[in-house]
Image (cartoon, rainbow, N blue to C red; front, top):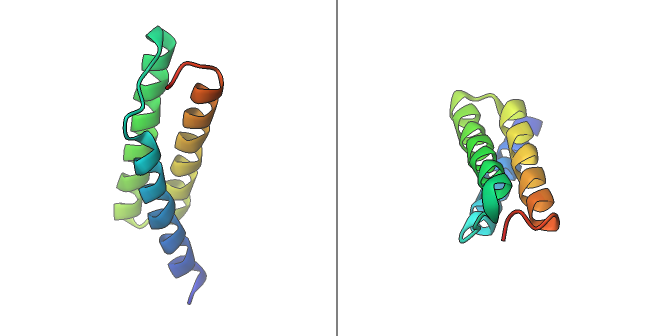
Amino acid sequence: MSLEDELRVEIEKWSRRLDESMAGVKPSGEKGAKLLENLKAYRDDAGHFLKQGDLIRSFESLIWAWAILEIGRDLGHLK
């Protein structure tokens, strides 16, 4: 399997996991709402870049989305 194929498999796997983790996420207040908006935007960007064949930017967008989700939860802005 080529490196490109491996990256595509990882993007698809982590995209599914992110979608599952995002299901039911609710914001706590205004900061949470902004974080959730950005989280969804980065997730959408990951899908867009994947469709364009830009695997690096797609994976990078997933990393940002995961970071926002985890930080938002840790700070109590996302439930």
